[in-house]
Image 1 (cartoon, rainbow, N blue to C red):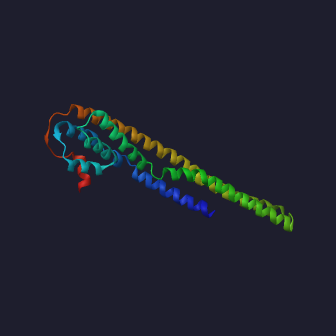
Image 2 (spheres, one colour):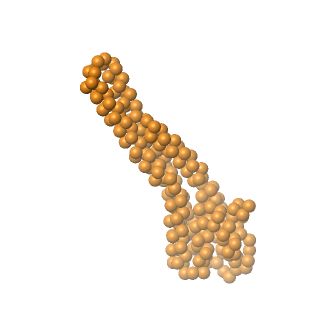
Image 3 (cartoon, rainbow, N blue to C red):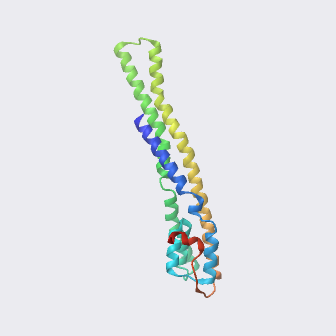
Length: 206
């Protein structure tokens, strides 16, 4: 039971941390993509402002990667965004593999505990005989507790693992859309004059 309880605590910690870290406003700040596109179309992009954007959010980091090589051909910009996008997606999936492992291991640990309990019980029968049937039934029930505990940990872990992976996939698709829109905006960008960074990036500077 001790390993199962430890896995339950770890799974709960991962679930709470991922729900906090994967809030939509933290990953995809509302209006950030549109502001960056307007900024890219009409103004000179200052490296300092791009650095602020990079620290803003995962979406900001992805858009900043494209702005870093904005003067290069579209294909090179796209490749840079894809490279950074893989790193961003990997960070968004942090701890999810661990949660999936807990979902797979918990029922096996429960079954292992039950097997050990049954072995111990049958060894006692060999030593002292069957004895009271009620006591035998109680021993079997006690041995099955670990299997039930393992399943109680595994079922929520599987559900939250799939849900969180789906949320990460949704975010990645939305970031891809924003990146494509930025590429189009860079194609339309005229010669520019210096300007201020978009409002949504100021959060990281303060």
